[in-house]
Length: 237
Ligand SMILES: Nc1ncnc2c1ncn2[C@@H]1O[C@H](COP(=O)(O)OP(=O)(O)OP(=O)(O)O)[C@@H](O)[C@H]1O
Ligand SMILES: [Mg+2]
Image 1 (cartoon, rainbow, N blue to C red):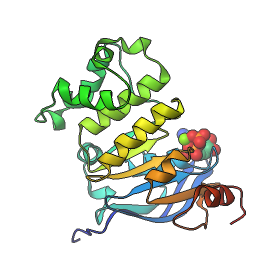
Image 2 (image 1 turned 30 degrees about the vertical axis):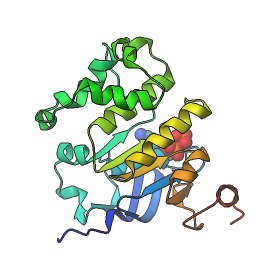
Image 3 (image 1 turned 60 degrees about the vertical axis):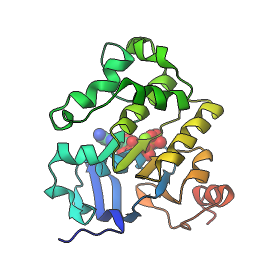
Image 4 (image 1 turned 180 degrees about the horizontal axis):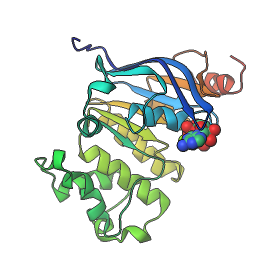
């Protein structure tokens, strides 16, 4: 199929069943390229599951997901996961220093030709309140908010076409969250971002919000003010 340049994702009639329970039902969504989409909705509504499907960590029970016009079934999973990089609610950490953890993706076979310098990490970290000394900290000793920022910097350093972020600042205070939102705002010029979040700070960043309720897309407006989003979440629109 010819590459479709306007969308990076299309989900067609996507459902996901886990242990006999429907988690997502009949999801139809299109995500434009180089846009930020906020995915929000109550706990348990299926947001992380949606992101895991889009990140090719799990596969739909039925329906199909397309990335730039090509079905995910046709991609090599590791190649795909370097184009669309997902940062989970709890970033993956191994024993060792923060630097060891930042370097993890660059040790993988399909990334071995990528060059990365310590300065790139330092530059990203300095924008979100962490200095060079952070690199030598033991991963066991970093806080939840520090590990979230490490996960984000690790993903940004890969310079992916698409970033899939699951609650990237849930453990951060408001001012650190604002720093992360500003960093993402600069990064959105060169990539598509799908971010699961609850904080209003993301409404300023997002071009569009998708609300999930009980595993389905709620039928609200595409662009919402904080008040409209609240009304949508509470079922008034
Ligand atoms: N592997 C699994 N096995 C069984 N049920 C699952 C599995 N993963 C998710 N679920 C169920 O699917 C539903 C949606 O989960 P999901 O984690 O996608 O929600 P969420 O919107 O991200 O919630 P939160 O805001 O709390 O992170 C929940 O009811 C959850 O219990
Ligand atoms: Mg979740």
